Amino acid sequence: MLNSLSLSSFPLAFDQYRYFCSLDHPGGLDPATTVMAIWPAPMVYAGPTEVQFHAKSRRSAGASYFVVGRDPAGMKGSSLAVAHPGDDLYDGDHGRYVLRNSPGIGSMKMLSFVKVMYDVTDNVMKVPDDNRPDDFISISGSKMRLLARNGASPCSPTNIPTDLVEANCVPSGFMVPKGWEIVVDYYRNIDSGRWIPWSRPRSDPGAAPRTTTEGQFGTLGFSLRHTDYESVWHDVSRYPSGTTGGGDGNVINLVTEIPLRMTAKMEVQKDRPNNVISQDSTDGRPRYYTYGTPFFNYGFVPQTWEDPNLKDSLGNGGDNDPLDVMEVGSVRLDMGSITPCRVLGHLELIDEGEMDNKIICIALSDPDASSITNMGDLERVKPGTIERLKDWLKRYKTAEGKGENSLASESPTSIKEAMELIEETHERWKNLCGKGTGYVSPDHGFWLDAPGCKGRR
Image (cartoon, rainbow, N blue to C red; front, side, top):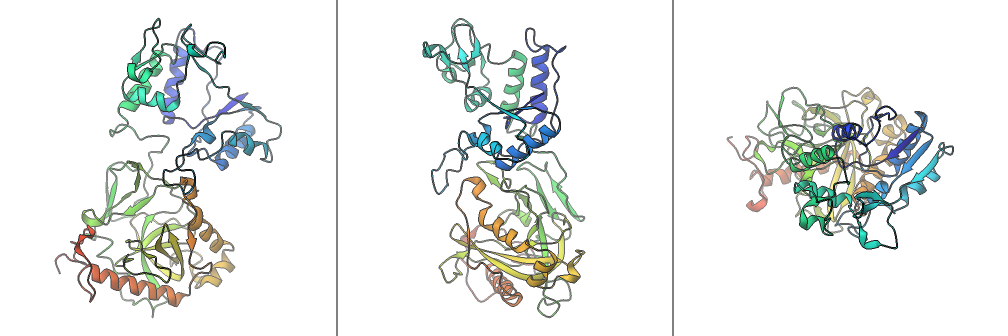
């Protein structure tokens, strides 16, 4: 039994369809002797953890051979990387090295792909012949995607151009004709509402009651807003109704943007009407966390603002966002929900030269809330949580090719200091809304026309 590891250029359904076409194509795979099996675990970024997971899980399913291609290494890093911008995220032999050192799969034999190219003399993909290099054309994944997006048609089998992109054609033996039609259809419509790129699931966002959504979750057209408030940033109080925070157990309101275990990078949109919650983007595509699955609920304290003009002792200004919150309970909070949350302290993250504070709290509705009232309790009831939070904050961007973040202090602050930060950022928010004593330049571009800010009073 043979299995291969590949970070596909298409969603799973498209790959299935292409394989069906290969089975139906005359002279292709023989349906009588070919079994197609789908492993329902699409890869996200082909990193070391996923390489090991796929190898071990497929071994458990009976695979005795495992093909390791260059895909675990071929992922490009960020152009903003601190070192070697634009280089591959992993070494070319990364997947093989990781698997050799992975316990529990020693009985599997690792097979590496041999690079094949298109031979123009007989229209067949094969290992290049060093004695006639001019007869071979390389068709990389990036070139294939460009040709598909341009709607390339089959080349003449007797006149294969050396520059396929300029001629806008694909060699006839590169892919079965029906399979190529599917690839072209996908890439020519990738920006429309028909497809969600890659293997992103069409899933429910887990929206809170009393919220409304527009668009398909997983696309940049998705947005969520609360039906009781024009803006969850400006109209929701930082403290639950009837409390003042400091005198009532240090409880704040948490507006959840990213529920527990969700990798979609959701955030309140400061510049859009009603400050809707939608997915962040990178290079025009929806952004996802790639460092791992968040083990916390993530959101913000309403009616707060980290002012870029407010500098810390190292000269770092605020990140220009509402004050962030990491909720450490075990219950998934709905996106857009407003949850009373007990403050335990905060971590002072320095993210690319900006102060990006993170309030740490536990929802009052969490089963452990009665046992956790401070950071000491958190470590006693849920050992290792603080270290995991610090690791995440420092390293979550390294999966995007960026350098590590730093913390102003390795120890969380006290509850008192965290509450003082909340009050300071609230005063800055009041300045933003024209309700405080300080001046804020009007060229920020934020939507402030909610009743709680600059809208009708």
